Every structure is written in structure tokens, then in C-alpha cells.
Image 1 (spheres, rainbow, N blue to C red):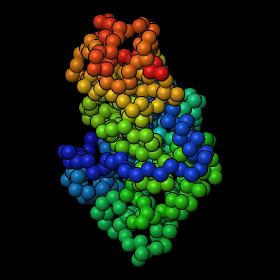
Image 2: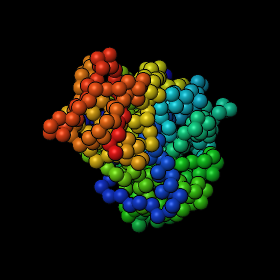
Image 3: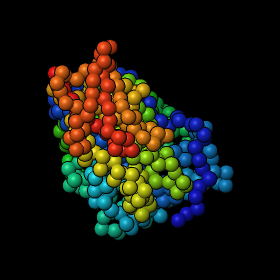
Image 4: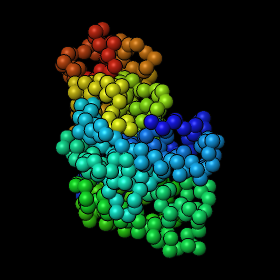
Length: 455
């Protein structure tokens, strides 16, 4: 293992976080709309950040920028640092690479789709791209029978019945036609005048087009093309996305395209990062949030979210109309850390008993009484509602009872637990507020879910 870097992010810096877009345009391709509706039924997915940054266990890609929010490594010049970072590819040698294990962990957690980082902003390709030598095929993993990592990851998750998402960074800091080595790299943007050097930018556009075509033609069926790097978009950095998307869908009909944080026809669903929107949104969206403090595996001590926190986030996101994409970082050896596995197993156990309140649900206008930590979802007909009672990490018990206004249960209906089918005591008071009592033996649980009818 190499020495741990002294590079770190400035405290409180959030400039790398993609905020939620404000506008949404429904696709005009019927196959894409159909795939979106299928994706909206899944609700829970995993995003896997893995690359050369995993070797020393540092922040993904960003440490090679010279933006103000990055604390530089003062033991090297900036150029020396970049060369050191890119040189980590020779140490990328995940001898315990276990994509089948990753897929089993995700499936057992109740996750139903995956987004895999085929290439982050640093340009390191986790497939055998013919457009560059900066790939896993020329890394320390070269010669391994499973060196074409993306193929085995996609196959493993596909074999578990999951929808496949291909993360791809539009900017590529390793490409000499994006970051020209003859010029300084002041920030995340391309570092030369496109109008002055149009031939360089045309080469870069072809490079991106060709890499996306490799991924769309050589790795089986792909459901989502998840495009990161929202600053790399027209008009400032026009990569010709219309033609790229047309090409991608010619190979993958119905492909969902997510041009993150770029409102328009290529942002088929929105991706608020590290946060949950304040209110309900009834167009397609997902919150992408990390299981720890970091997207990838890090060598420093990291704070993990508890199973109850993950279940609470998932319940809130789904009640507000979205999906939760949970970030998990494989280790340099190619495994999922046991602590992550343990947390996800607990989430999965809850999902097996209560997933009816999550999967294939839709929103209801009254979606929460947040004061009582209860969230509501509905079946597609809107006749059956589900209530999910969650607890915060600083609370050892669920509330003994919950109450809400609206979503009034139909007279004579039973309110029953999804886990075990026990009938709960309930009443509606003179003000029309519903009160439900929870059994005492459930109060130590992470969350409970129940169903009732309103029509």
C-alpha cells in the first residue's frame, strides 16, 4: 500500500456536489418512457465508485484539480502530484475482485439496480477501451482473466436480475484533448480555447463518442447511461450529446440517459446529490447518497450510516416520489467491506418483510407526518396505502403511537403490519386525525410498515 496522501477536501466545501435541476422534460421516445416507468418501480439501487483512487483510499479524482476547495499536497509540485496520481494505475491490482459477491450483497439488501463507474473524471477506464492506454487492461491487473472489469460487473448484476446503469464521466482529465498538457489546469474545465483550437475539441468529441459506443456495444444490455460532470455541456463544452445519445439508443433501444444537473431532454431523471428534496416531486428522480462519508473506499476512519438511517432515507425518498441510489465503495482488493455488508444485510432483512411499502409504489398527496416519523406510499391504484414509521439514530425506540391528518382509513378497514400481519388498534378523533397504536414489542425495531385502505 502506498503512503496515505496529505491531500484533503477543504472543510465544508461542497463545490463538487451536483444539486437538483429545476426543470424536467419528459422524453418523447415511448420506449424510454416505458423504461423510466419500469425504473420507477425499483426504488432502491447501488452506485459503485472504484478506480485508481481506491488504491491509496482517497477522494475520487478531485485531488488532481487545483481548485480552491482542494487542500494541496505540499510535498510535491502540482504537476508531480498529477503524475503520481495517474501512476497509481500500475498499483491497481484487485486480486480478490468479486463482482458476483457485490451483486449478491446488493440483491440481499433489496437493491434492484446498479450504477457502476466505468470511468470517473480522472480518465481511468474500467474496460478495455481502444481509445486510450489509460485503462484497466494496462494496469497492475493486466493479464488477469477478468481484466475487462466492466464486463464482469455488468454480467454479475444482470445475472441477479438487476437493471444495469453505466456511469460515464463526460470530462476526462487524462485526455490531452481535454486537459492539454502544454497548459496549466486551473480548474475542472478544459484548459484551452476551443475557438482557437477547434481541431483539439473535435478530437475530444470523437474520443467521447467512441468510448460511449464501446460501452453500448460490447457489454450486453444497458438500461441507464448515467453521465456525470455537469459542467461539460453545451454551450461552454459542447460534446455533441445529441449524436452520442442517438448512437447509444440505436444500440440500446429505450436507454435512459441521465445528463446530471443539465436540465433538458437528456436528463431523463434528476439526481440530487447527498440530499433529499424538501418536498414531493412527481417526475422521475433519485437521491444519490453515500453509505459512509465518501463515494469510494477510503483508508481513513469513516462514519457509516446505520441500517435505521438507510431505511429512513429510503422511506422518505420513496414517499416523496423518488428512488434511493446508495453509494458503496469496493476495496482496492475488489471486495465489499464487511461493515458495509453487515449494514446492508440488516436493511435487506427489513426489506424482505416490508418491501411491499417500497417497491412499485406511487405517491399520495399526504405523504408524511414528519413530526411523528411516519411516511406514506400508495399502490398504483391509490386504494391501498402504506405507512412506514421510522426512528432517528438518536432515538432508541420507535414512537408508541403515530397520528396524521388526511389519508383517513376507510371505515371498517383493518390496519395491519406487513411483517406478520398483526392488526393494529386505530381510531379517528373528532378533528379527523387518525391515531394508530404500535405494539410494545415493535418499539425497538428500526422501522415498521403497515397497510390500510382508504377507498
